[in-house]
Amino acid sequence: MSIDVPEEIEKEWSQYEKLRNSGLRKQANKALLTTIAKIKSNQNPSINEFLLSLCEKGLDQDPQQRIQHPLYVQCILPLLLSGLERKSAREISFIVRSSGYGKEIYDAIGDISHRELLNIALESEPKNIDIINQLVSDYVYELYFGAHHLPEVLIVELDYAQGIIKECAEFILKNQNCVREDIVEEHKYYSNLYQDYADWKNKSHGIDFSSWCNLNRKSYSWIAAVFYD
Image (cartoon, rainbow, N blue to C red; front, side):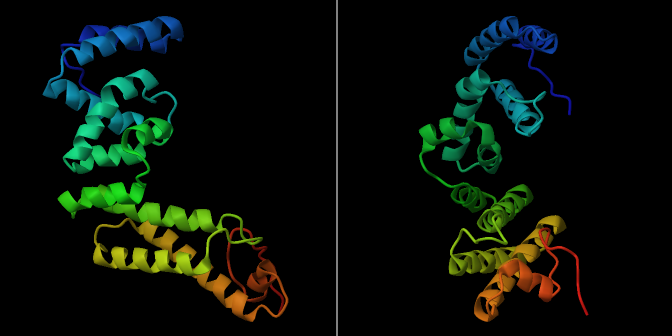
């Protein structure tokens, strides 16, 4: 995705990118600080849109596109926090995606979970497809985290996990035309996994969960595909 650079900072940004792409880190960092100063002295809609466009491109895991820390903290984060105050879904989405800046976000807004933030966004934009999918992904990630030490141990209370599964399923049903199929399939996977764990817990008869799954021909990544007639 190509980003249009506002003319107010075009010269400074071009110099920064040239130095960065050349691997001249010290010179690039100095040029970035010059660019940041120019941005902070020229707050206007075109620069704000440029900064938000950087989030679209730079809040993924590609090291080449990663937003530099000083630029994020001094220019982008204040913009995102302003959007949070307005309950703007776009800015809230970027806050949730800012996984590499957790400390700075915590310092700014405290201990607010991603789910709470996404629900705030849905208050203003109930049909925002990106937010809806981010919220379902957040539910699914919690289910993944609770189960990621299986088959040895479940690290979340089973009743709590089943409550999350139910809450997520209701949300998916409510927004079934918006939720990506791959996320729905992940939810089904963990729904089945936790149900199987509950069944094993009630009917294990002295065998471990992995053996129970194998015996009952359950297909999970850590189950050997060896069945006996």
